[in-house]
Length: 333
Ligand SMILES: [Zn+2]
Ligand SMILES: [Zn+2]
Image (cartoon, rainbow, N blue to C red; front, side, top):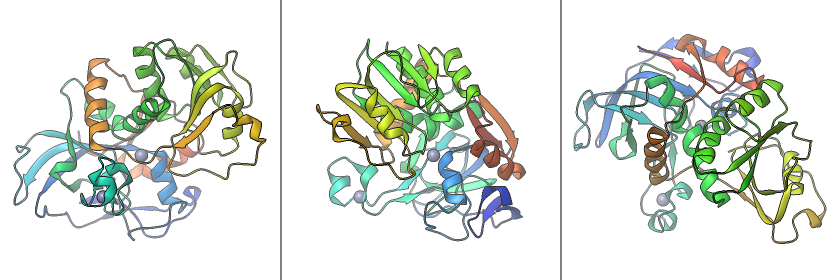
């Protein structure tokens, strides 16, 4: 099969992904084999490719926002029929036995496997995954529009849940990429006003088009005090700025898997019961709830489609803020 392989992490400007012929995987016990239609491009892929996340498997095929069809069900499977349209996301598998899994917090599992990081992912024509960690894709959502929902969408949804904002609340978004452009649609659907801060004018423009009450630079204070803020950008210097914009008791949620160091800041920014909390991965329940909601709203993703062979180009564009919305790799139509 055709695939994009990462042998050695390196700067994306040097195009570290190789477009190669790789062996087609075979489904093991409890796994399904999926023919990939499209795979979304996530900032986490960039962190994997550039080595900001320490390698778990090498070489590895990145990609964890897969939409495709089940072509073969392995031994011991029963959930999907051949031809079922499904999605595969970041969480490939958990042990199911650690204290976090037993507590219903499988996103914090002690021994998780991640798609496109600990196991091969979706920058390829075929993939295998445990059927228990595969999502049915609602009919309403087209392949290329569903792909960015599988990580950007689900993580944004978990950020919204942890922000604990109610109808009428004022919510700040710092960074307005793939996750934020989906999360704003959910927030608006829930009657929450979004104030979007981004370093990029194109992203500010998209935020306003999608219903943001205000859009400005990350350093600019929003016109209203915020009940909560979500930091999607991987830039630690934003955290004090976001805290400064909060009302008493408000919280800042950090949506990324990797972030540059957070600079020191005066305690008074945190005092008055303000809170900073990170988001790690998601549970399958988050994914199922969100996909149902996305079909109900319905969420419309803004996408830029690249052929599979041009994954490096898509990741370069992502790094340079040149993608309004989300990038998607077209594997098969
Ligand atoms: Zn576990
Ligand atoms: Zn992701």
